[in-house]
Image (tube, rainbow, N blue to C red; front, side, top):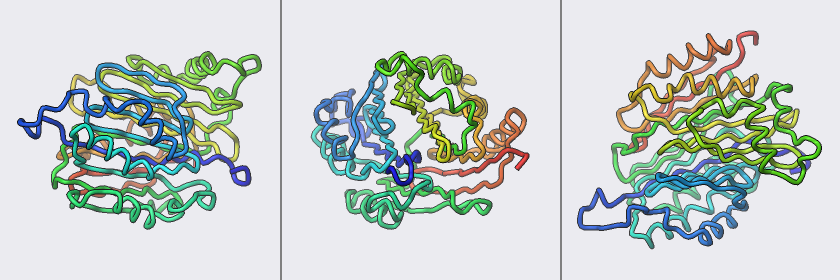
Length: 348
């Protein structure tokens, strides 16, 4: 990609499976997908064209930092997001096969991405969302009969659309987690400097990653999270945060001209104030001070709450001086509701 620059915008795939709770006669190991051996995961990632560079696990899930973004493995759910020119959709069939060997059946699939900075550098089928949807559909079992593809395009910035394809075996979503995906471009140049290697730490990715986490303020986004971070050479950064059954992840491409950062987390609403979405987002965005921000929030089932969306807009305006320029909403059968908001600084 030397001609254009590194593509920061990720492709994201989430696969959810039926567990033994849905079938009392089927006694499946509670570890579920976490029983997939590393060699098999590595083979899948090889097809996608990336590798594991760091990993951490707790009682709830396994989190892998990849050479191109992240992979999370829960007992009945896999989330994989990859940037650059990776072939993410090649992971669908082998992951379904590995799950089937463990007695797990696919329940739902969601594929999403933003608009690439360098679309012409992408290989087929990522040059066209229609082609991507065809590949995904061909990779899925017919039991996932509730399907929908949507391109959510903000009127203020048509070049920054949000692409979503979902397929589900159920008409109602079973997912209780709210997923927030933030894409940020044109990062503040001073803030972006935190993600360049310093002289002397060329050989130690571990200490360089920790230094970037501390210098940038990423460690303050969620002080409860255990952070597994990685610094790339000569620049760039990735981290996965682990907090109980909740994950978070950040990826940074700091080079001027095509700077990009993403923040994603899984939250649950209405419980003990743990992780107010608006506050979490304001802390994450403040690390980068970008000129252009888009936030895609996926609410499972009946969880969509317009007040949460409005609160995000109020907090980002008050704390960071960001104005919501566009708000779109779409419903996906069996996969919940997606709200897509775009923001820029008020001065613009």
